[in-house]
Length: 59
Image 1 (tube, helix red, strand yellow):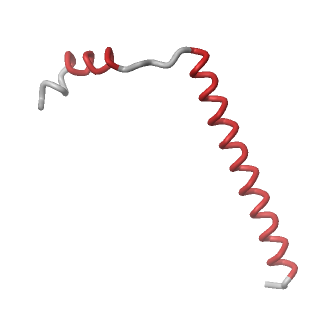
Image 2 (image 1 turned 30 degrees about the vertical axis):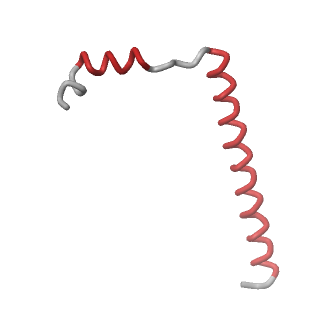
């Protein structure tokens, strides 16, 4: 178990990792940024609508 936590064990694991190519990394990063932006817009709009309705009913 301790061998896995050694420097040689860590280097072995790093060599096994399939690192993404630049094009794939850009595509995945763009997807994450787009989804996070859409969720941000959704939650801002939801908050504005809820605030409007709560204010309209006088709470």
